[in-house]
Length: 215
Image (cartoon, rainbow, N blue to C red; front, side, top):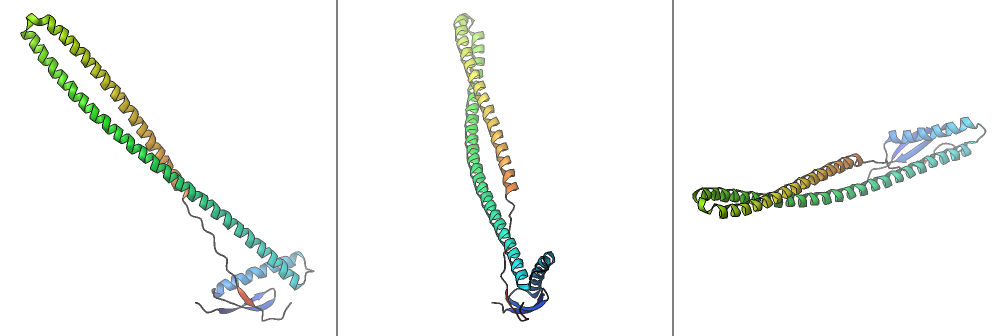
């Protein structure tokens, strides 16, 4: 623990020896501040004696200190509210990321379904080509093959309609994914704007001893 240091100061025409662990420059600045307060009060009312001037100066300094303490409390409360908002936004971001992951899984499932439909479509095309070749070879059975071919065409149309529906669903999911990304980016921007720390300087108490003649 640092040993107290004695520093001689002058306040309102009187000399004092102040002891404290703070640097002498700090003690002198404190004394100069008190001296200035007392001189300011004396200028406004030159009929006050030394004691009343000191009391009024102490009241003014105490008032300033209390206002600073109140402001520091308000700042601390504001900072706590900001931190709570940040935590809330972080929870929102985590929720949105979970929803985005779910949308990605659904998109991947749709992609697999689309691949299966394409495979089925290719298989159907192959079958149709085979039917066309068979139709040329079996003209005598042309009527039966036409009916079978019509049935296959109808089935192909249904499959294409299902494929188009799946593509529309896929496009909708992509739009939802893009919207979720925009919302996430906006939340990150809001976090950056509300995360600047704010600090208040601590107050120090100075012990002093009066070595001059009392007023």
